[in-house]
Image 1 (tube, protein in one colour):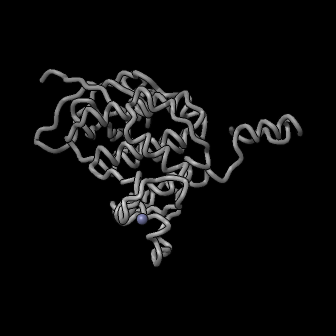
Image 2: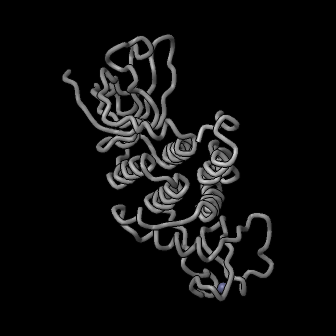
Image 3: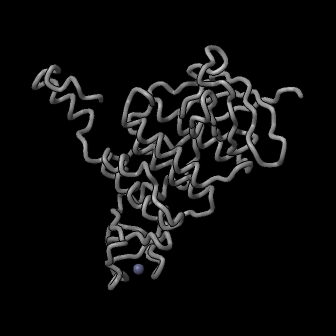
Length: 278
Ligand SMILES: [Zn+2]
């Protein structure tokens, strides 16, 4: 049988037996698929340094024998390793979160070219943009939209008051919508997230922006953290299960910014904080 080929982003790699690896990719024309790379742990040529999470690959494969089942991957070409993501733990943590969300919101053999384009944009942006949490928030927001769970972030769902400075708002993770301060008496339970008007304005703009313009949206790390927190609570409500990499993403909002660390280096000398990976 002749080999077929497709391009995709690696979502997950796992060991399989003594010498094989299982590779899950999101491919342009196949959607999410998993293949087996025989002998990948020993191969010096066909797979070395290629089968890594976040890499963009062209794979050469034989289709599974049945409708479901594993592809047989015979070779892979590295299109882009996304090295900056591997060298910066902030980018790396956000990329892990993005991959986990993708795995949770997709099914096997169900291609969506819009999601493929979104993934390509996301990993390219994580490579060069210095605000990985912003990229993760934008990805999360757009993924929810593609999956049919677009949150309503521009008005109070009860009185229809548009988001503006004259009221505060809480986000209701149970139904993905907002409640304004006038309407939310009795809704201040632990599942409710207060969300600033600034964050809501950013998210509402991001929901309608095209991918080629979305990078121009600016937001602070605090705003990105608030956006991610709200989207996370909404998502675990939808999935009814936790997202493992969330704790690491949340940790990012508690550590000093790169600018602050650079300030510390300037004041105290690099030898005191040289062990910090920034
Ligand atoms: Zn209201």
